[in-house]
Length: 164
Length: 180
Image (cartoon, rainbow over all chains, first blue to last red; front, side):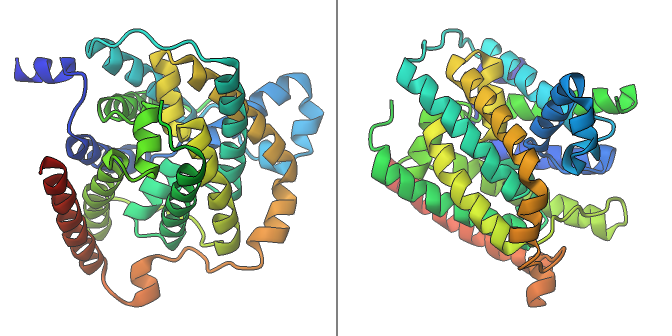
């Protein structure tokens, strides 16, 4: 019963959530030989869509052509993240979400656009570099983690005083 | 086109748990993420540091036992620094990172769906310039697949112990300050 009640709680202690993500990374290394990562799945999505409409262009772009098979473990990991979050929020009793304003939509599209450019230039995101890289004590992971934190904090303090 | 089915299902299961933990940890809420950057709420840091310590101790132990191989990304310091300088501010404006954006989108938050659209467009644009990026930003500063223990000669166990001590003291101080 305790386990069922925990699933129905709207949130968990951040330490519990973090520890479980840490254990999940053991599982990923053991079962798939891969660390947790998210952002390269978006390149796979691009490779697939462009492959449908412009296969010659994909074949001529090494960054996309090397992704074979297109739909791999990490792509399905990202699909799983969406499903897992859906299950967690519904079990916790959360349903409604605000309708975004036009300004918020523009902010989200542009923010997402630059977020992914940054992730691909840095060769990984908060998961692949920030958590998986840092937990392996990779220099690349820690440089990423510290730099996004410092630049994000400076940006938030300058432009995002109001959290809505 | 596809990895073998068992491997895809394994990815799906791993992702399901990842998304579940992110949502329960409240980081699919963009107010929590922005509040972290404003240093008002340290939920994001608590999750990341705990995941790094627990995950790292286990992965290094399994590596020492010969069960797993590490998967370290190359230290292209210039491209990582520039990419991070774009990523951090973008994360503040979007309010999510890629993983938490996918989680928020799965939960049904429409602003995250728009974020995923922007992210996909960003990936499409980047894929046109990867070769140029490698030449201009990766090649100049490449320290290889280097870890902090290799760089400093200080063993991984010492790094984890020091990080754990710092994390414990810092968050205990923060949590006590929040209570009083």
